[in-house]
Amino acid sequence: MRFLVVGGAGYIGSQMVRHLLQANHEVVVADTTRPRYDIEWVGLDIADADALDTLFSLYRFDAVFHFASYIQVGESVSKPGKYYRNNVAATLVLLEAMVRAQVMCLIFSSTAAVYGDPQRIPIDEQHPKLAINPYGRSKWMVEQILEDFDRAYGLRSVCLRYFNAAGADPHGEGGECHEPETHLIPLILQAAAGRREAVTVFGRDYDTPDGTCIRDYVHIADLASAHALAVVYLLEGGASTAFNLGNGQGFSVQQVIDMAREVTGRDIQVVDAPRRAGDPPRLVADAGKAREVLGWRPVHDSLEEIVRHAWHWEQKYPWH
Ligand code: UFG
Image (cartoon, rainbow, N blue to C red; front, side, top):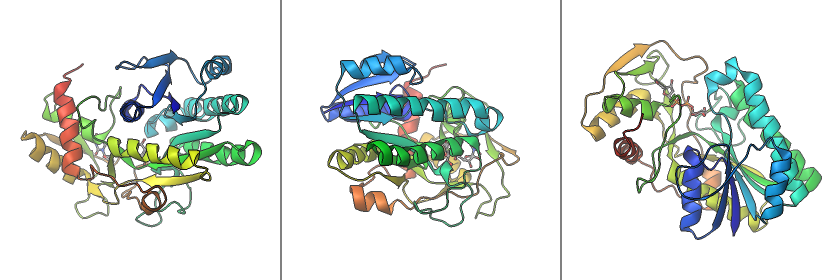
């Protein structure tokens, strides 16, 4: 099979590319950034319809994986235009180019942020979509656009709603490196490595057992395997749908810090701060649908392993 991976230079996209190459697929990456690994790369912005038409005229793709988006919730509140332009408008350009080229299968990176403040835990796919920030709304808008594109043109898609993507490639080939970094686990490990003074805990007054926020951390290698199953599902004629991807187990910020102390054997300085705007107290997935329909079986589902792989990556690449 030949696949186009849009946003294949990023944290999760590059894990997907490694997964597809290991399964002997042909892969082309389209990204504005050059990947850090060796791959056929086309430097393009998906907002550029002409560049997409050229790309689709050069290769016949069986499906497209779309990882390219802005992901910072806080920034999406202060710069909504940036999020709607990149995450929604540019995706629309990609979808129209796919229809012109008759590439009719898409795997789309969505997010738990489409649900907003949870009304029940664990969260299943039927939970109301009441996103509370432009980032979550931008992903939900694309999901709705995808339903319309299926109805109008027969473009079938699977939307994968990630909970908290975490960890690093189990073989040490890649890991998290956002600029600026806002995610909990890499920030904790940077503090463990002495690359930052301390990690800040945003809020200890939540209605949770230890007062800190609870999240469902899911390993990027397990996310990649879910995408691979999703594309098989689509290519075998499966109907457009959405799946939650999470382990169904929640860990508090404090539990993640404690686990990082254990894994690294280092002291990790902690500074307490008020709640971060827009953080729901608890997000835990019901991913039963992905297990039943796709046969998805996460294999790196312990917090210890997620933190250990991330720590290995942090130590292997003493960048910055
Ligand atoms: N946190 C801290 N200190 C930090 C960073 C984070 O205490 O320095 C806390 C947050 O308040 C939150 C938890 O750690 O309770 C996890 O925060 P992250 O920033 O790592 O992840 P989020 O849960 O905010 O966001 C993730 C994805 C988003 C996605 C969201 C879905 O990164 O892209 O899940 O709800 F939108």
